[in-house]
Length: 237
Length: 241
Image (cartoon, rainbow over all chains, first blue to last red):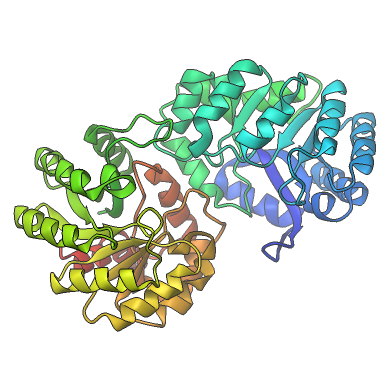
């Protein structure tokens, strides 16, 4: 079964729809996705502490791994949430500057990323990889860029060449050879399956996987091996 | 049977290696696509003057699986008329393509109306890139241009929920759903509101892998009757294939 780095629950005010844990779990089964990393939109859009509590509960209920969402509009609370996540054994932090109307240049973004990297946490970063990527460089951070689009594939490859911790999600790499070129130029260990089911047409990513010219070992890395490595040996998914 | 009404041939300016028509055919084979309508990338993003003729030998070499879409820039209809005269007799082109963004001609513009009138005079259907609320503007223009047959590419992208509003303005506007960032449930939502007679499959290959839109179509759970219309029959009728 596939592991997905980009699971979201809650309500997205921008589109006005809700997906709770049960609905998301129901959708995953038909897609061949066995679980992954889940973040609460409540944490990203309204209240990080209660949203992150929600994510931990839903993750425990379904056998997923919780991600701590932080709100960069309040970087002080965001830093506290990073510390709390580390104390609770949460292994990843999600950054969503675009959803929050926060420019990538905001000091809080880099401060939160530095804190997460220092705590050994994986970062999941939304936004244009050309803009967010350079901000996260030089911190020794391990990052999956959730919105890496094939339009910007060359820039991701360049960033990844300098940053051994940089990875791309598959979700928006839906061109004819994007997955294959990332594997060729950056390595299959840099590509992580993400499809944002319930919010994005995840079947499009699943079908792109089916059509991908990847070797069996590459496919194993992309669909779960890389994410397990990034979460650390103590985490089971 | 799958007909893909939205294809391209030639190199892209992105980091991708798909310049040869062999890339079109390889991906078509992988995805079970029988026929693809292609426009020259060069004509779309740079200059139809050189881009459209460059497609001719490619179509001749590829055979009937690749059929041409002649790119029209609404700002240069004298060139378009000349190329229609020169290239339609080859029998290699089955329609036209207008990109509203690259050609600086929004769907609801006067220039678009003039371009569609030219194409209607040649009885040539046209695939028009649509993004945002220009989808509705295009529908209003189509309604005013007698006889023109238009396929709105991308369902307006992020404005896809305007599709029913566009559909009700004219029955000579069809819709094609390819998008690199497809929202969940979009195709079923549109189908239930405009009906399967108004939607036809397109991929935007070789920019986007056809598996992306095929996956989105799969998620829509088409009935057998819907699949026949969406995946090939509507295209054969509109483009007279």
